[in-house]
Length: 277
Length: 75
Image (cartoon, rainbow over all chains, first blue to last red; front, side, top):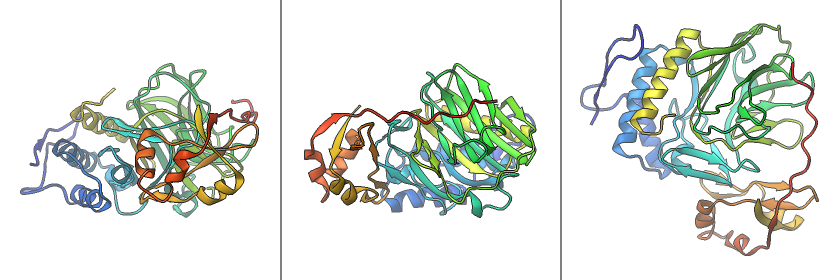
């Protein structure tokens, strides 16, 4: 049963779900999950529906290319893209699926999003990655999502939250000169890296800016797809991480206001599902 | 971390093969250049019902990863 959503954040109007049913995009996602053989609870459907409404109200829905809400506790359900039927994922062996999210083993597991960044218009100057981590303890030396070549001076795009040594990283450009690297001891939260031009990159945690980079990148988009749970290393073995993911998205750049409202929407989503951190 | 040990021939058989509509096998090399496959408990439940169930009878061993490449110093 659709419910009335309340306005969230400053300046956001109250949202009312379409009378008689869910938002059309939300319903299409539910149908994809069902067709894939997955199942969603009523609570998960209501939360996901409200998430879509909140994202549309915040003006960020159209900036999304892939949204993985990680509901349904199965590979079939969690592989589905909330935004559209494109970029349905495939999981390798080694994942654990739960009501709280999906967890890779940190050794061999990743999800291929099949989103090739070289096919996205102006990727280098217009992108975002987001990752909702429910894992507090810093660990690993890889990336939670990304694609690129981890060799000096070559293109790499992704997020690492949070590595051993308390390093939280947003890469969008040539490795490592265009990187944003901040010290963070708590890996839990909603991490968002956004590039609005080839000389402007912002890293936020829970809607607040934690780092910026204004180096002028000369990087080009790698001709390969983004992995979740690891970096898709275009030059050898992948780099895995083991943090639990309760949400992830890929898309166009977001302003600081949009990043803040995105966090509010995602946090409300997680709270409805009783898995917020 | 304990994983299944595969011969090169077994690796060629399973690497990249789907065992469900949205899941495929991914093996990794150990420090000794031995192929390992890691399956979660959920994976094993699924695999046990497929033509790949022979994997569950493979020998298991402790995986030691190869050393990570030296990353350039961060700026």
